[in-house]
View 1 (cartoon, one colour):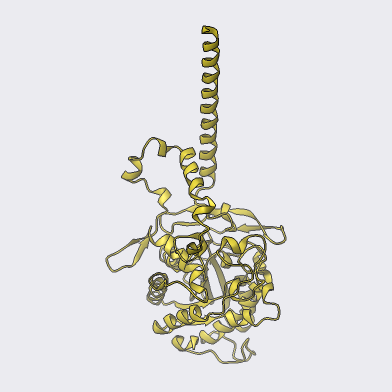
View 2: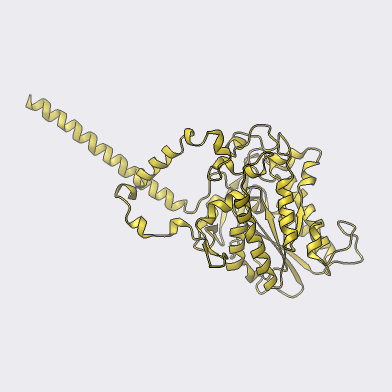
Length: 409
């Protein structure tokens, strides 16, 4: 009797010890994984191994680093390298040399273009297209960072990029920027007048609340288990989740033909654009805003690979025809005297519009980068005066205009 009890106790003890060892190993593994993936965006963000947490802009790219990124359609490897300003491309000369006209392109992962070679990005193509018509040395700087929106772009310029002395800043607006703004605004510190000061990554902040967490909350295994339970399909597959801005399924809800009332969120998302315009003006720099469409605003068969549409809350073969988002952006730009260009008609009227986007990611294909570069080239030529060779035929066959307010009309 006693022997059987001892044997049973021994087995229970060994089972408990084995469970503890497994949990310890899992905890160590998770901590190593998290430390190596600090600041990472969702898994579909290209160049995620280049992303680091930031005290000022929530996250950014590592300076002087390289990473191998995979094209989601072809599987080919693309090496993305950053300079000392943590931007993709060659090292900019600072102070800016005389005789150089520098264009700074702000945006998110589409602007970064980690899916394609540097020479295929619209930033690089834009420089190639405009240089023959410019009497100065023209430089286009790629300042795209995955997940960025006007709020983080403003902070990026405020805290870092003004040192590049850009002559023109082009803010490339993505249709997911309203949802992105909601994500980051809650972590942003503002001054009394509502000016964004910094958006520290919450993972970098050790608050009193975190110190008062329960013992269980200090273990990554417990927190991982909670996050997995919270991510079960039942919590994110309800129809109403497609209209809740705090749901990942609602990223593009505001551009739908029957959108929810996100007027507060869109107003907040656009507000940093005027802040950026004022910042640019104080530093003798022009600001222009350009917008391109999401794949589901172009064609029913655009970006329909795998479960990309489902993950974004977009129904298969859905295409949004509403012009309201583009009209709202143009109205905002005109009210604040900001040059504006809507590139969506060119994408929507292309012979094979789906080819402008990747099949397995909601970003430009090389063809899309080329189309957008040509649109920006025409727009910049019309908008910026006094730097073009007057004896050369222009990309638009029109003369540059001097009034930035009328550029979007």
